Image 1 (cartoon, rainbow, N blue to C red):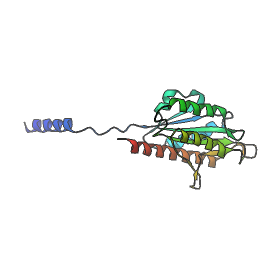
Image 2 (cartoon, rainbow, N blue to C red):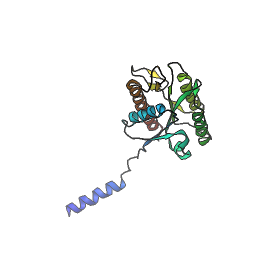
Image 3 (spheres, one colour):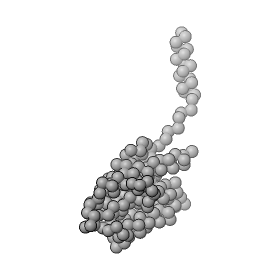
Image 4 (spheres, rainbow, N blue to C red):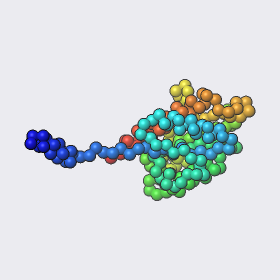
Length: 198
């Protein structure tokens, strides 16, 4: 009888106790355009870094394959581009326009994080301008801009790689910078979302 009373008491306490709030997983969308495979390689390294952050679901897509639903579900969007004529690629600009249309309304990108990464053929080929163009679009949409992290521990506009004839391919250091930047973006997005939750 005593065991039965203890069981009933435990059941009633559990039934009346408020349920612990469920923390929804943070969703990050990594969207990129790549012609030679270099920007895609950098995107995959960014995602590797994000995978080290618990509670974050990452979706990796080419910009032309992203659905409106994926944009709406994203707590953070990180965009990668190759440099074209000193700025971002036109398809990436089209994607940013798609993001703006999907989030049109009173809140736009409010409560979301945005970031950038890029590849370019030379050390000073416009990588800064390409990343700034992406970050500017996000800031205009009311996103919180999140920069990258260099191998030396300094902040940056986002991961980058020089891939031209004088420095072909992506170096191990550039891949590591992409992983560090991806980890930072995912961690900050997760923490920002937690701070926004009721």
